[in-house]
Length: 305
Image 1 (cartoon, rainbow, N blue to C red):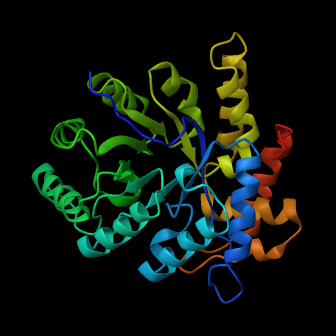
Image 2 (image 1 turned 120 degrees about the horizontal axis):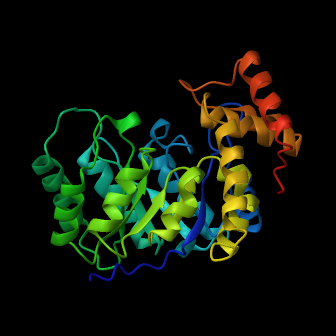
């Protein structure tokens, strides 16, 4: 069996939102504060500059500067999984080289997502070129499977091919497809693969199947609840705790996770700066906010657990 070595911890990861100033530039100081808060509130690590972090609304330079600031201000690099996948091969290489040079725990890599209907062969060549160009033994890639957003899925066959070609480099996956059968198939095909569910709903299932954990937008808020599931994963309480976590996650479904999470953080911290979202994303409509608040009230949801 292949050993997929990584420095990233198993458990709970927040797909961190990115605080912005009123001019929609990244608020670097607020970002550091939020990442420290996430690590103090149930999260074992942070997924930085993923979908929830509005990564593809920022330039390569903005993303590099934000990562540098986090690490310079003391956020542990080995607890960061950094999104580096772009449409452009050269942008992906540049971001990945920089992230690896900072000794991050891993990079989360989307497929090149503009062109649809690409073949597994095309994806294999793309990822091979990134890996060969970065040419760093510290590179640890986590594939980012999110077909709803990208339109470019990673088939089980492709995952097997890229892992077989680069077994020490491609070590895991974030599966945001929302289909348990796909996660199960990956873990059965590649025992020990560091697979993280993209939703809390399958957190316990993934752990029991030998996966690594969960990386989710809503663990910005449900981190303490998810931490309880992880702490009690081998006890009789696990299923009951997972049911409560699933209930909380489900309450957020139906509207934009970026907007919903930022709305809740604005209310929790009593800071309207959290409502700043870079276009084309935007805040919740009042009807959506009212519906979300009603759902959370009905389950007595509390951010601090």
